[in-house]
Amino acid sequence: MKSAVYPGTFDPIHNGHIDLIERASMMFDRLYVVIAINSKKNNLFSEDERLDMVRGSLAHIENVDVVFHSSLLVNFAKEKGASALIRGLRTVSDFEYEMQIAMMNQKMSGISTIFLLPDLKYSYLNSSIIKEISKYNQNIEDFVPKEVAIRLEKKFTKD
Figure 1: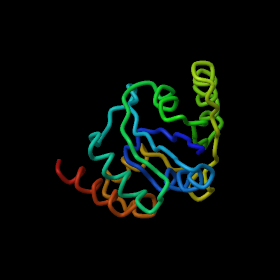
Figure 2: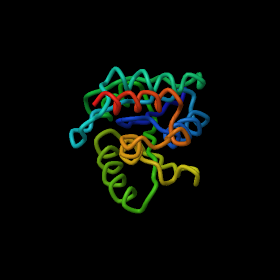
Figure 3: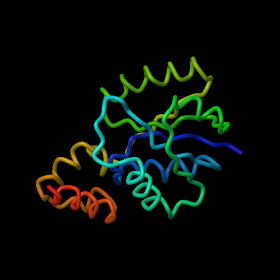
Figure 4: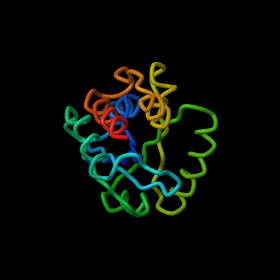
C-alpha cells in the first residue's frame, strides 16, 4: 500500500489545502494529513481546534487520516511507511524554501517530496491572508469551508 504525508499548520485549513489534499489522495492508497508545529508561527487556533476543522473539512475523503504530530516529520513518515511527502507550491519563493526542506528530508530519510501546484483559483490563498481579512469582518466563504468561516468569525468577534 502506497502512502504519503501532507504536512501543514492548517491555521486555518483553506480551499487551496483541500484541493491539494483531494488530488494527492487520488495518487496514494493512504494520505496522512499531518497538523504540525511550526516554531516560527503563532497559531490563532489550538491543536484541538485545528484537528476538528481539518477533520471536518476532509470527512468526504475516505483514504485520508488527519493527525497531529509534534516531532520531525520524516520520523512520522518513516513510522507510517510513507513513500512521499506532499508539498504545495504557489510561488518561486515557495519553491526555494521548499526545495531546501525537501533535500534535507531526503538526506535524513530517503523519502522523496512531490510538489503540487494549486489550481489557479486557489493560487493566491494562504492562511495568514485569510485570517487578516476575516479579522476585518470580510466575507471569506469563497476561501474556506463554512465551518472554518464560522470559527474565524467567532475568534474575531470575541475581542
